[in-house]
Length: 164
Image (cartoon, rainbow, N blue to C red; front, side, top):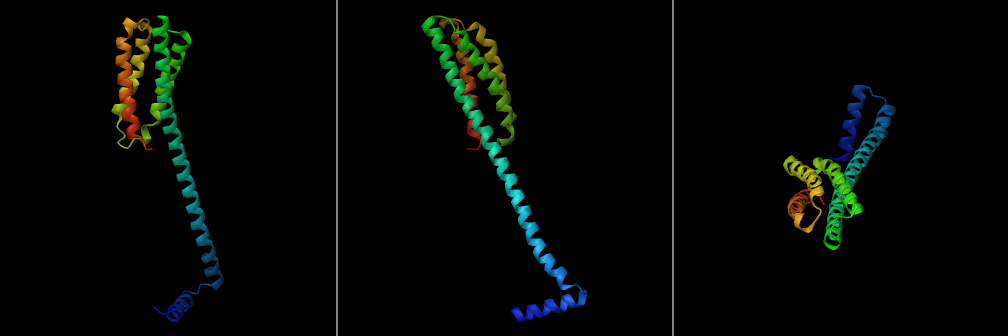
């Protein structure tokens, strides 16, 4: 369509509905500004949600690494000294509690929203806490290692499902 034709059609339209040109000018300035502001607010909110997601995923993955380190430290004391170190035990318990709390935060970011892996993970963390007191000697570590193995498998499953 020709610009002259379009301009003439717009003039006729505005003259028929008796809209003052100042209102048209005002609307043409305010509307794009409102759209730009709305877009900016939406993008800011989206960025905040994305950074929150990255923080939660990072905390869970970091906690998974802390779990591995704490288990290694705990078992090392049993293998070397023949008994668990109280500090290593406390550190492992703290990591178990931390993982229990953090895994619940990951649920909204799991694509399938499948609670089975998360609930199994929580159950194994609780099981680990009950197995720890009996893990005082090399001979008594079988239930400990079975539980650690299940936790590691579930950690891997949850980490695989989380967005990177």
